[in-house]
Length: 114
Length: 115
Image (tube, rainbow over all chains, first blue to last red; front, side, top):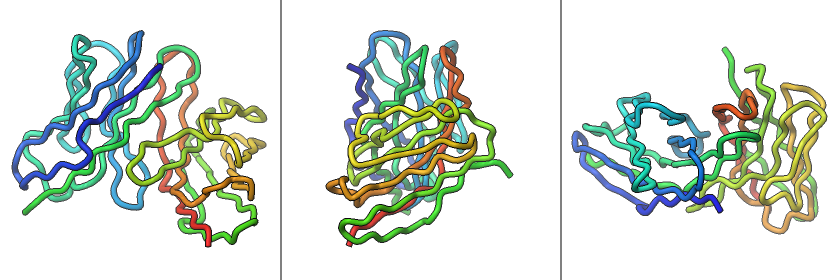
């Protein structure tokens, strides 16, 4: 069965530091992968997505993610974190073909220290 | 300005009452979805609809009902049969391109609290 694991429930970084949020998936075929961000009490905003091609994907707000098939991972990175990046981040996997069902990870809550 | 709207933002319900959450989109998307979010958990799919007048149960449909009479609207009713309805409810939509890449876009959510 498909599944998504985000190993880190909470992460705290200092403003200006680099960030990496981990995401591991379990899926037999070619996955479609997404990262969403959620501010408190708000809906989810799409940061970036991977469907095929270049395994390094650029997104909004300076985020990028790298798809590594051998490690079943799709980690999210940002070279320099801003205080406004404090939020919850969700990784999701969608199956190829047919109805687009998304399986979400449990999320990683990011806190940013000044 | 295209997007997805959900109303109300906050909703309070007494035990035994049915309540309906509204979701409207003007993105001309064919597919619409309802998710439930609980603290410390990811999103879980309640119902989805790929086209008008058609919808399917998701992973946690018990105690919920939906309708899809118009392309732009996908209301969710939380019935009294739902044992633990207090949660944050998110509506999403997508182009619904079967067999192809498809991206879901989310509304701002409705927080339902049972008193």
